[in-house]
Length: 512
Image (tube, rainbow, N blue to C red):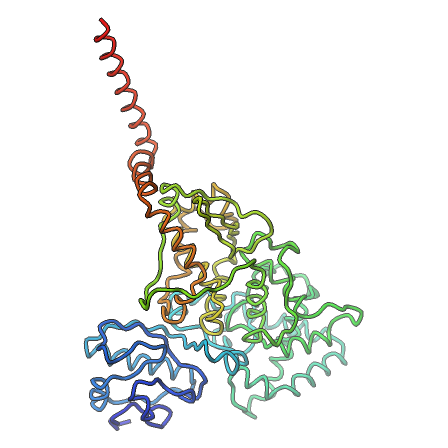
C-alpha cells in the first residue's frame, strides 16, 4: 500500500478519536456489532486498562506511524483476525506479552448479528483441531465447498438423487420457497448478491435442505457406504449448517400432512442421540423449546445446545467473586481428591450431564459421561458455538474445564471409570480418554468473558476449602505417602507387623 498512517487504517478509515482515549472501539468498527477479539495482557502500563476490546496506549500510537498496514481481506471476520495479528505483533515489538483469542464475542450484544448469521469457527480452535470442524460424509451449505473430496463428492450425487425422487410438485414448491428467501439466506451466510451464481446457490439450498429433512425423517435410501451416525454428526458441525427458517419451511412441504410433530422436536429426537449424555436414546431429556426464534445462531447446532442446557436442574451461572483478580480457578485431579477424603457418588435421578454437585460431607456427585465416536466432535463444535455465539451460556465449555481439572492422567480416568462415571464405548484405553478431555480445553480461554461466570466456581471453592482443612490435608498426605500404590500399602502393613512383633518381644522379655 505504501502509506504509513499515524493510526491503523481499517476498511479505508482511520480509527476514531475516542479509540485513542481507551474507551474501546465503537460498535460499527469492522462493520460488526461486537468486538473482534478477546485479549489477555500482562505487563501493560497501568494507564491501559484491560477490557474486552483492545485499546491502544500512547506508546503503540507512536509506533504505528512507522509500520505499513496491509490491505485487509474481503471477509470481515478474517479482517478482524488480521487486525488482531497486526496488534499482537505490534505489542510484541514493544516487549508486551499478549495472548490472542481469535473469537470475537460481546455478551452485551445478544440480539443482532450473533443470532441472525452463521459464524466461523474461532481460528485458535480450528488450527488445533481442524478436522473436527470439517464434514466427514456430507457437505451442507456453502462453507466447505472448497474442500470437496471423493467421499463428499459421492454424497453430492446421493443428495441430488434423493431430491430428484420427490414429486414434480414438491420440487417446484421447494424451489419457489428457496427463491422467495434467497436474500435472507445470503444475508445469513454473509454472502453478497451475485447474479453469476444465483441459480447454483438456489440449487444448493433446495437440494441440501431436502436432504437434511429426509435424513431427519429417516426417509433417505438405505446405504452401505456411510455410517448414519456420521451423517447426523455432520449436521452438528458449526459451519456445516442451514438456517432454521429454511428447514422449517421445507419440512412443512415434505412431512406427512397428518403429522403434527414440530420440526424442532423432530430434529431434537434425532440429534440428541449424539450427545455424551447417559440419558440419550431415551425420553428422559425433556424437550423444552417453545419458540425456535429464541435459538441463537438459528441452526441445528444451536437448537441442540439450547435444549440440552435447558435440561439441567437448578444449574445457573453465578457471579464469580475474584475480588478483581482475573484468574482461572482450579481443583485437584480425581485421584488426589480421593486421597483427600472426597468420595465420588452417582448423581441420583434423571439429571443433566452438567449437574455436578459437592456437599459439605465431601461427596461429589457426577452424572455419567458416555464417550463414543462422536463425543470429541460434538463437544468441540458446541464449545465453538458458545465462544462465538453464546458466551453467556458456556455450560459445555465450563463442563470441559471441570473435566480437565478432574482428569490429568489415565489413572484419573480409570478411577472415574471404575466408579461408573465414565462409560468408554469407543476410545482404545484410559490414556486416549484423558488425551481427548485435555484436547477440549487446549485453547486460550478468554478470562474476562468466561471466568467471571464460571458455572462451577462455587463447587471449586468448596472443594478447595474441604481439601485445605488441616484434618483433610493431613489425611490426604498420609494416604498419598502410604496407600497410593499396592507396594506402599504392603510396606506399611509389613512395618506395622514388624512393630507389633518387636513390641510383643519386649513385653515377653519384661514379663520374664
